[in-house]
Image: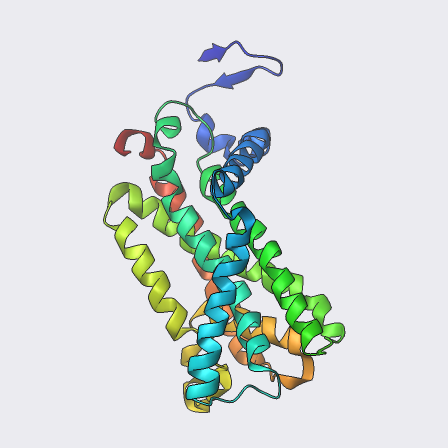
Length: 279
């Protein structure tokens, strides 16, 4: 047993500690979590010409393109809501997920020097990386508020359920991020696969169109994509009675998100002790 002399309370590093005290150590290292999250936020916007405006420009331009392609050219249904609001209500959770997933997936490689030299619960790294996505999400939400005002569209009390779907998007990003972060340490090719997967997911998820266009017989299969339930939930919370929420599909998406998170944590923990050696 080796005792490390630090400021009180003293941390004892002993054989088997990482297994017996792991979840307690997550709380003990909460200040490291705050530091990593704040560092990632600063790095995201430091020395950029437009600063936080990037969090507004990117989803706004995507909304414009999707509205023109799917709403104007393809003339897809908008469920009795202005098409820009329909699209942006889906872009918010999608970008929260995709950004969080990408940041978490690359987090271990980005912090390789620290991981190879210092002990701490490695789960802190991918979780803290998702915080910057939440900051982007809150900034982008002002566009949605402006669109609601512009079109004179007032949400009803269902808007109070929105934090639940935000949490569902975050947990889905965490689950996928844990898997990718662990796999990226072992197989570096995943750094190139993730951007392709995110781009593909944008088009197979109901972001630029309403999930109502999916035939009823395929809806449950389509809901195996956990972001289908998240996006439909966002639209239901924001657009109210203009959108029909398919509860069976939502429950299935929630189940897949929970399964992804639980298996992601288990796989991450299984490989965690080897990260410092492999990375």
